[in-house]
Amino acid sequence: MSLRRAHKLRTTAGVLTALAVGVLAPTAGAPAATAAQVVAAPDIPVANVKAHLAQLQSIATANGGNRAHGRSGYLASVNYVKGQLDAAGFTTVVQQFTYNGSTGYNLVADWPGGDPNQVLMAGAHLDSVTSGPGINDNGSGSAAVLETALAVSRAGLQPTKHLRFGWWGAEELGLVGSKYYVSSLPATERAKFSGYLNFDMIGSPNPGYFVYDDDPALEKVFKDYFASLGVPTEIETEGDGRSDHASFKNAGIPVGGLFTGASRLKTSAQAQKWGGTAGVAFDRCYHSSCDTASNISDTALDRDSDALAYAVWTLGTEVPVPPGPSFENTADVTIPDNTTVTSPVTVSGVGGNAPAALKASVDIKHTWRGDLVIDLVAPDGSAYRLKNSSSSDSADNVLATYTVDASSETADGVWLLRVQDVATYDTGFIDSWKLTF
Ligand code: DTR
Ligand code: ZN
Ligand code: ZN
Ligand code: CA
Image (cartoon, rainbow, N blue to C red):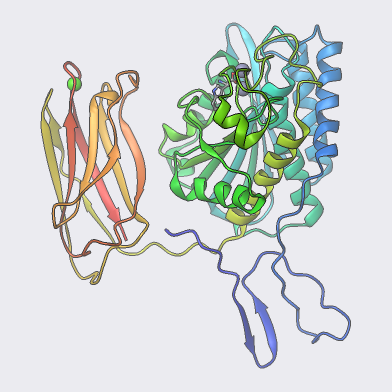
């Protein structure tokens, strides 16, 4: 499915009909029919985001200096965010779970309306470590997601997708809250997600501008926004599996997000393009008591909050292009150790070339997916790398949808999924795979 903005204004008998997002009241003298106008994403006032951070700081100060899982400061943080959302017209749910003998809480807020079969979610973990108030990690992401949700309410946005916002518990203990949320979703509900956007540390005092590269379409939305600011970005490489987006990605949901850096040191090249100090950590107070309300770059927080809103408005209001024809092979193909196997799909009746956003959905059962290298092979033998091996990725199974620019390939013919097991021990099988044009 290609992401494109389909704000088409058509005139029929002098009436403007909008497919676009919000609709403004006709201006004086305009035709009586609704005057449609694309409503761009609003600027998120960084002062509002910082006001939420001040609240979270006060909460930590009043509750032993932190907002960690199982501590009073965390539940107080949940209640603060929930109160803001309830007052703004959201439908909120507090989901409880138990970890390390303590009760944890996820907060999920739904904005009424939009296609229930196309859920776009933005989230952030709300817990801190025990050593400090966790204002950058991750008050920053929590406050930006909150203020974006409040901006949706202020705008009375009527998105095409169903907007959902989440604040996760116990991320610092191993993505516990988000894993619990995703695993509690029935498969039918998981299938409705068009994407999950994660924001964990987006106000680092010596900031970098990193964009998650897990899903090309979601990555592009953020890169487009920063390009409009003239701010260069880099691919986020520190975090694979290290924040809540991993819980969604492991369930086959497209993910994206932003990050301004943690304990790694800013290089001279990065300082050249972003400013700040080379040889110093992006956040010197990472997981420390000094991660307080003064441990924030207002510029980074402002830019990432505005990018968050831009992504929610852009992705949330686009008119999804219905998927083209799909072709599937459900035959199981065993993947023995240190062996290469292929599974064919014969495409016919499509004609012309394949699209620039050809979707390859893969379902492989395997006991150590880091063993696997996966390629899509076009009818002419051209190979497109979908997944590389990784000695550290010991998780089970590959359930993912990859987007491939196959526009130089003829669509009709025999396509192959080629799977190489490149490490000893652990085997599996291709359960099924599908091409969607
Ligand atoms: N694990 C996060 C901090 C973190 C480290 N690398 C990344 C990359 C992307 C997002 C977050 C992070 C935490 O301590 O909460
Ligand atoms: Zn974090
Ligand atoms: Zn952390
Ligand atoms: Ca193996």
